[in-house]
Amino acid sequence: MSDLSYLPKEFIERMESDLGSDFHAFLSSYNEDKINALRLNPIKHSDNSTPVAISDMIEDKVTWCSTGYYYKDEARPGAHPYHHAGVYYIQDASAQAPVEMLSPKPGDYCLDLCAAPGGKSTQIAGKLMGEGLLVCNEPSKNRAKILSENVERLGIKNAIVTSEYPDKLATVFEEYFDCILVDAPCSGEGMFRKNHDACAEWSIDNVDMCADRQADILEEAYKMLIPGGKLCYSTCTFARAEDEEQIAHFLSLHEDMTLVEDRRLWPHEIKGEGHYLALMTKKDDGRAEVIADNRLRLEVKSPSKKELEDYISFEREVLTDKIENNLYLIGDTLYSLPDTAPDFKKLHVLRGGLFLGTMKKNRFEPGHALGLALKADEVIRSYNMSSDGTEIEAYMKGETINADVDDGWILMCVDGYSIGWGKASNGVIKNHYPKGLRKL
Image 1 (spheres, rainbow, N blue to C red):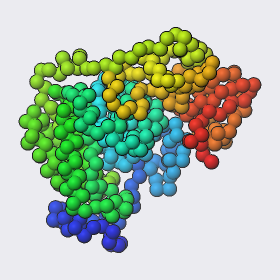
Image 2: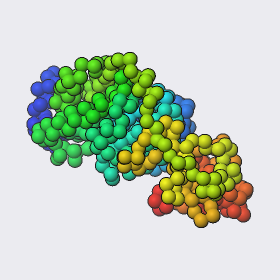
Image 3: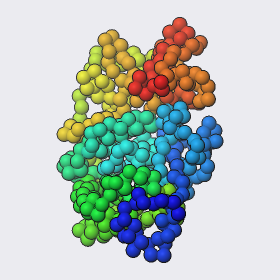
Image 4: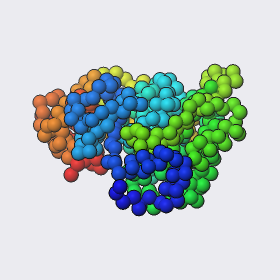
């Protein structure tokens, strides 16, 4: 067995006590190679089959997630144009299990309470397919920015990204959501094989601190769950204090909550890292339909036709159909709010629906988020590049593209998947791929 001295001594002793005869198989799993996985984005790729362009990266299917795939060690999916086009999300296979257990459906009102960096939020969005509402929350402002970027990259239209602590969120969303995911901050024991640095932050005291914090988060989640709703709790740790004991304590406080299923994913038993997940439901006391019908909606003053004049011109010249959702103008930035948009005026919101673009002097400039959310058949002009060609490389570096296309805004696509904007003039497409995303 290779050197496992990086594992904390107290952690090893506790795991040996907990696992008994399975302990040696568990410990041996730390000698195995890291397991890599990704998950296709149904919003961009509705067919569950593997896209041909990445088929040589893929090794096998993730058995518990219909859109999950394992990829080869030598593959570099983060560098592929499909990653930048939001065709897939790189996510540990075990981390794909909680949303599958929660099983939201189109039209549900969903909350991902501890959402950064966005893997599970984007997975929920793929289940909703643009219907219903997704509130993605992350208290850390810096991590919330990364979350917002990933929501944008995967072309999600019906999401609100907030950055609040759960108790503040609960004052706005009392008995509001059909589905809540609490992927709780934890001691991270399940990630020790993948991330040795996590061991340095581990201690018995940290496990206890995490358990206390998780209990507080679960209490706030309970307040926001509608009667008849589903709550999935998950961690990437093995500590019973953060897993089974946490759920038992929570259920003892709430007689109207029922445990439907809980499950451990052990690295010596499955292809993935360590995970715990538990699905609970709240008793339907007959009020759910009335509560749902009276959910608070965001009331906004619609921009005037004069304020929207340049956008309307863009819409007429570029899009095949109008974007009919509520248009929301904040300063010079224009958003399309989901019809289900909640009243979020008291919250710190990073992304209130789909960012359409910016009102410039005498013109409208479409946002990158809008480009990623559109499909080729939703625009009048698009330009397709091959994922293995030189044009996509040039585009992602910010270079111009020579092409025989009509003048005006062009939706740039890679193998048919939208990846950004260009603006054509006299046979040259000027590059509008964001400078911060360009590959140098």
